[in-house]
Structures are given as C-alpha cells and as structure tokens.
Length: 268
Picture 1 (spheres, rainbow, N blue to C red):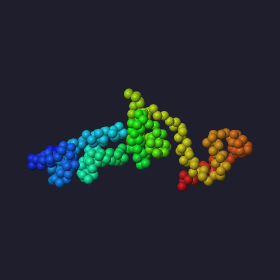
Picture 2: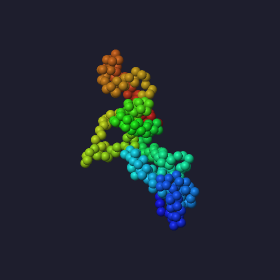
Picture 3: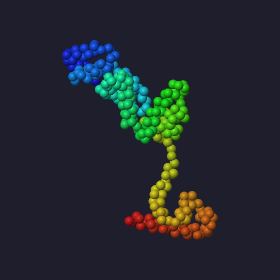
Picture 4: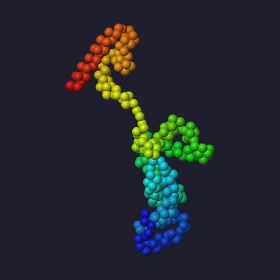
C-alpha cells in the first residue's frame, strides 16, 4: 500500500492523528481511520501496516518450507494484515492478538485451498496442523523430537490416524520424478523399477473374465488350475481324481465354448 498522502492537507490531518496518539497506540490509529475520508483512511491504514509488517513476515516464516514459496506466504500474510485492520474494533481487545489470529487463519486457508499437490481428507489436514503444534510443545518440554506414539498420546488421538497424517505430509509438495537423485545424477524416475510382466495378464483377464461368468464352479476351478497356477494336465488329474485324458478333453471343450462366446460378443 502507498503510505504517502495525496495532498498537503491530508498530510497535515494524518500527522495530527499520529501526533495525538502514542507511537504504539494502534487502536487509536484504526479508530481515526474509520472516521476519516478515503485518502486519509488509506494513509492511516498504511501507517498501521508499516508498523506490523514484521509481524506478518514472522508469522509467514513459521510456515515456510512446507511446499509453498515463502514470498507467497508473506503476501498472504500482508493481505491478511490489511483485512485485520479493517475488521478490528477496540472492544475486541488488543490489535496484535487479533491480527495474529486473522493472519494465521488466512495462511492456513491458503494452504488448504492451494497447498496440496494431492489433497488428503479434511480430518487429515486438520490433524497435521495439530501434530505440528503438539510436536513443538513436546520438543520444548522434553528437549527431543517426539515420535508418533508420543504425539498421539499428547493429542489423545489414535496412533493409526497420526501415522496416516504424518505419512501424508508429502502431499504438500510431492517429489518430482525429474529431480536428480544426487548432483549430476540421473532423474529419480529413472531409478524406479517395476516388473512390467506383472501387468501383462490384465488385457487377457479383462477379455476372459466376463466370458467365465456363466461357468460352473468346477469348470472355473479347472481353468484356474491350468492357466493361473500353470499346472500340467497330469497334476490336475491327480488333484481331482480323474485321468489325464479326461482333463484334456474337458479343457478343450471349455476353451472352444469360450472362443465361440467371444466370437459372438465381437459380432454383437
């Protein structure tokens, strides 16, 4: 905001308002601003803002390093400071506590609306804030960083919920797969390996699954033993108590039924 008044008369009125109050009497400045004209109001509000910019930056700094740029948080805090000036009334007590609550509320709201790469449930979001506060209390009281069990006891919360909230902290700013593992190293995504063959059955399963819906239980079991467990016809025969030839004929009949059904569905 611009602090300089627009005219000399405005400057005189503002100087009078400032001189009639103690340098730290913010309430009087805000009260004077509420009764002043637009230009004088802006000048008086600018003076209150100037006096409390350090408070806004300090409160924003408490949330730095959590996935949102520090300067963005400072801007949110500064806007919240202006909001607190315009919403303050002397019957609400001192200005600084009121401004602090307002600024912290706006910062938390900004995190809630803009800070999640992956948005967890609201209860987890709230629990994360409670965990941060509890961790600070325990650290100052005990002199060490608390574990999940200590935090759960401090909050009276379920250990499983605390574990879930702590695990979701990466939701603010997920690690980029393009980030190098080390200086000059390969990207993180290139270090992740998986067995692609583990997914090769999916196309077949999506195709064959619906075709098997009308089969009897023993027919499903026969197909499972042969094509899921990859047993030989002789092993299946030994398990079910029939000859290998019977298993062979029955498998051939089942496969022909499935092929016919698949062909009919393709035509349809």
